[in-house]
Amino acid sequence: MESKQAQSRFIVLLGAPGAGKGTQAAYLEEVLGIPHVSSGDLFRENLRNETGLGKLARSYMDKGELVPDEVTIAMVKERLARPDCAGGAVLDGFPRTIAQAQALDEILAETGRRVGIVPYIKVPDDVLLARLAGRWTCRQCEAVYHELFNPPKIAGKCDVCGGELYQRADDTPETQRRRIEVYFQQTTPLIEYYRDRGLLVEIDGAQSIERVQADLLAAIQSGSQS
Ligand code: ADP
Ligand code: AMP
Image (tube, rainbow, N blue to C red; front, side):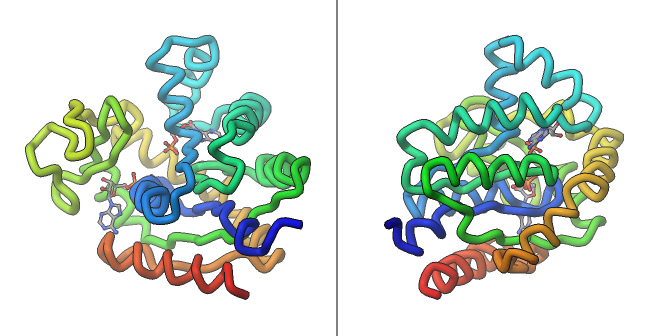
């Protein structure tokens, strides 16, 4: 039987767009040695490769709407079936609806696994907008920066891989507002879904990146020992 510690290594990061999920997931990937699985990154990879899925996803992403559950679930299921996810993953941006959360439970249960902990990174709305407005992302490795709060060492260049930084097409003020609205309508019910299952841990996301990292790691470590 799988140990509680191994089960706990399926970590679902919850939080609004701009809360810092991607930033923290990259850190957790490094310290815990489990892959960062971001549904947004998977869609952007499909956009870059001009796949059919990418073309479909673009029409929703550009408007700040959610891509339909069926295609999103199939894409993430395929990703979680790859060998590097056998021992866990840090999920960022998925699930975003109750149907996706139920599908995730089923996908993991098929192989005797389950979600171990759900850190909910809480950030006030006005802070979210300031974060999204200054976000720069690496075209090659998807590392995330902020022009004021977390600038790269060399402007316009990724510290990790030297790739070119760009501002996401869906980081315009109008789309940002819509994404935050969609989050409140469709994703916030997940807070209760996971609270009811005893998996939710609230993290104060309005602190510095380093403080959020420390709080997250402490929550994950104490969750895996209980
Ligand atoms: P999400 O994945 O939740 O949408 P990101 O990780 O992309 O959020 O972060 C959004 C923006 O906010 C990025 O520009 C990132 O550098 C910045 N950021 C993330 N966490 C913090 C923090 N604790 N303090 C200040 N800025 C942050
Ligand atoms: P993100 O990178 O998480 O900010 O996601 C960018 C966009 O990709 C979202 O605004 C959605 O259009 C789409 N997307 C990402 N994850 C999901 C998901 N789990 N369900 C539906 N759409 C998603």
